[in-house]
Image 1 (tube, one colour):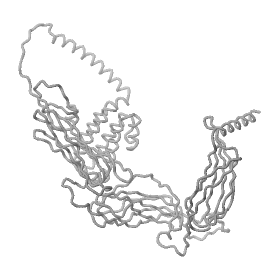
Image 2 (tube, rainbow, N blue to C red):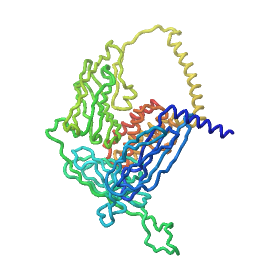
Image 3 (cartoon, one colour):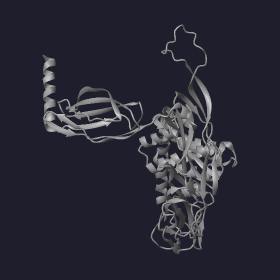
Image 4 (cartoon, rainbow, N blue to C red):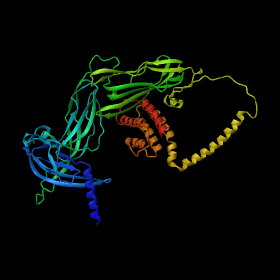
Length: 586
């Protein structure tokens, strides 16, 4: 009885849902391309109807009906909502090559008629074994496919190294990227095992997969060549040994695995010179860019520090660019900038930003005007040079000895001392003395007593904090994180420019600090793992991107020297800045 009651409830819910919504009728085929003598399936699906659909198929001269119709029904209840699906399936075999259109089909549901959408199918002629030539006659081959064959100097060209196979492939290995003299190259990260996709190539069906995708930036003009990519594949091959079985049973697969090397085709790229005349301030930038320059405050005392940031955003050949330098008026000292960048690959090109932050120290009071910072690049879509300007920058400098309103720089003095050890703040001392009455109960007397009490309370607080640290390992590790990071940073500063340990020590500085503050092991995860932990802590996305770009760039510089144009001093400065930013939020 219970089962019968549930059945009636389900039927009533289906009837209610049917009355509330009109049926949805769809037609689909399971392939866009087929070879002659290959089969495919046409499916008519109806959602939201209790009636089984009925159709009248037209005649297709290029197709033969192999089987069908096959009927199927499906009911589901999700969150109290009942849905029903009914379908008819027909299997056809392709007879002749060409493109055919399956017209909109009339679908009958009870007394009503609905129509499907039209479908298109391409039938390709199968290539005979006698006419196989070139790669299409091979069971396995690797092909290099460039996005363009002719580019401008500095314009990116992406190359996909694609595998075509008719046999099983189990593993692949690429030791290194091919030689490409005259190009700067960067590989696009992808999954360790590529996804296989079925394709028809010159009348032959292959399983294909993209093994590598590399972006090449030409650094000189002319006809340049990219050498073949060498890859090692573990593939399925037929065994040459005669079977010793009594019966020749096809169930037993007479094949084995073998490891073989394959080479892709070489590529020739024509690199054109950028058009003349070139602007005087053009430095080779190609793409689309925007530039901005700003101070962290618009008013400062004389002999105090202020930060000037120049930011370049956009997409193009970022790795070969250097930001323009500011042109400052007389009476302003400028120190070597701190350089940061956040660059990623989007749509087969590099996008992001580069930033240079300068410390300025104006020595004389007054109104300072900094000329606009300009940047010129070649726009590929417009085929012309474009100059962007940051606009004029104004700074008010007050006399430190006057009575002007209090203003401060965006940098604390501790930060300035950490970023630039050679900056010192020198203020004129007041050498005037004032005679006071010698009374035993002066404010200084009571102040000394209050300070003594505070000192005693401080000792008790220190002992309590020490006890907490001794009993809580993670807390003790978190508190000592900054001290440990600064110790590593000092050790890095003592190393030579070409020391192999320097960049590894800077990497440990940042990773160790994050791991200590988040109470995880330094070697427990990679860069992506640390950035995900920062996101879980709801850290600012700018800091997360800065951390990710720093760690990735430092790793590349460690294992591919020369790929990142940064000196050891610049890496140390970037580490100091990132450590400050992380210390404020962790």
